[in-house]
Length: 319
Ligand SMILES: [Zn+2]
Image 1 (cartoon, rainbow, N blue to C red):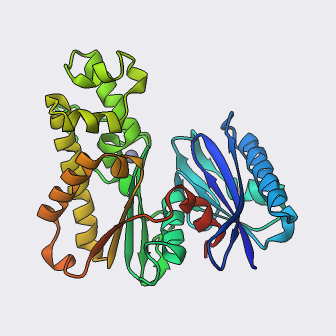
Image 2 (cartoon, protein in one colour):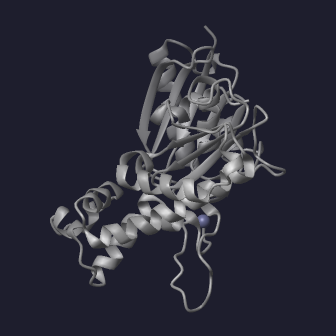
């Protein structure tokens, strides 16, 4: 069977997998924590993860034609340069070149959600469809776009940065939240798991009263989106107000994306969106209210099929 190697490079782990590129099956995989984020250290970790996965699959690490890498960050087209990866603390890192030199193989780097979208297109919820929008809300927020059957990345290769569309007016009198990308007022700054948890912690510290505080036994480090969702369903007024805002922002932004692109399928994924049923309902309500009715006549909405494996599978078959 034809094999490829895919690497999922997140903020905390690197996972490499040997993948059957005909079926999308993972033959073997190896995950390793990133203890340091310095690019040369990350390269060493990725190299080791690939060696372990290859050994487990019974192949030589150089036996595949190329290596695909999905990075949680903004990537500059096919250059292999990561422009901005807040979780890794990277700006303008030529990770493709560094990996190519270390591995002695061609390396293709792309944004993790572009990679996930391509994985879904080849083997998952987007199979057989030419126009698909994938939206993930997890620790970050992002999208992957398949347009006309191709992975769409724009003129320079930076399209689809859905988490960084602005959703808040920037005026001196408003308390605009800052995003990990450095900008102010991004969708991600208001709706990602990391940012929601940070906001709840800040607001509790500033005196907000909510059952979330009891739910974490006073340990604010344990605050997460799924606890907000539990509190919402138990009728907590703070959680209800917060989720109303987050649901409205996400639902409206997704509706705008669908209104512009008119996909055949919208694929939703990510731990926050799939792990928070009450928030999911609010997003759906705002989406239905705001989306252009003509853009949804033939739209189907599905959850991502490949889950956490989308990154390595999509990376192994990147075009
Ligand atoms: Zn941003």
